[in-house]
Amino acid sequence: MLPVAGLGTRFLPATKATAKEMLPVVDKPLIQYAIEEARAAGIEQFCMVTGRGKTALVEHFDIAFELEHTLRERNRTEALATLEATSVEPGSLVTVRQQVPHGLGHAIWCARAFVGDDPFAIILPDDLVLADKPCLAQLADAYLETGGNVVAVTEVPREHTNRYGILKVGKTEGRLVEVTGLVEKPAPENAPSNLSIIGRYVLLPEVITELARMERGAGNEVQLTDGMARLIGKQPFHGLLYEGRRFDCGDKIGFLEAQIAYALKRPDLAPAVQSFLKTYVR
Ligand code: UTP
Image 1 (cartoon, rainbow, N blue to C red):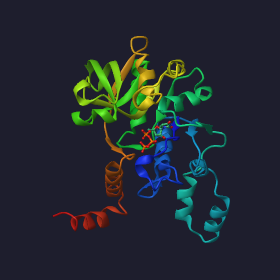
Image 2: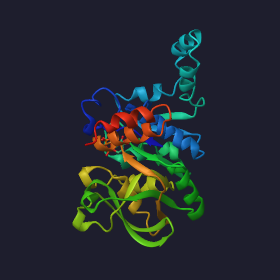
Image 3: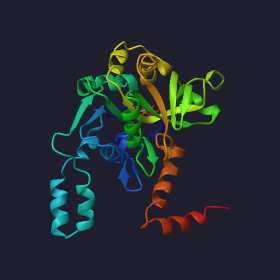
């Protein structure tokens, strides 16, 4: 599931008429990275939770008939290949609408018919993870091992705990940590650890029942973290210290850093990027 109904206020004015998830890192929009990562984890059915002004996100995965026709006529095979990578199997992408952005938990609840009785994965497209093995595939393995809820976690500076969902931690086994509590955006002095949830989850369907209570949490929003917290003790719940580097692209600095990191991974761009970067370092 891909919740994309947020307002993206930190990226105004860019997000006034464009979805945040259409912003490109190098030459690919965030939403495409998310779909590719989900596919790499074996996922074949996608649900976007959208809002007003987000239709481009769905268009992006449709066939662009006229464009493809013109490119074919002009023999632009490389450009054509990049387009082909963006269309999805017929019927594999559905959307539901979150009419009012009441929070991430509310967005997930809006997709309850899609979830049904099965475990499901969530990717927040504004979190990018650069990794040898895609982050969601790492979570899927952890889910197969534990049979319960698994969230991707990373250490954050203590002074930033008030930006994230933070774990209270039990036993640790390698990269898997048992979750004994979850708090959304705690002040540093109240944070039970400095382990933060990032935008990758594999959850059991019971979380939907908890979200249906519509209890408001931090920022007066229906928080996914609060819904998940109610599952602790009833179902296995783990954090996975994933391997890879995460970029918070919902934030300007994280977004800018992602441009550099992803460009430097591209053989066609890396030499030029490295050379211009030198001119900025004093
Ligand atoms: P953010 O906290 O980044 O909020 O949401 P935002 O609205 O996207 O951006 P800012 O903070 O105003 O700049 C995290 C994820 O949850 C989704 C967002 O689309 C994003 O993927 N979300 C958030 C919803 O789908 N609905 C909501 O009501 C809130």
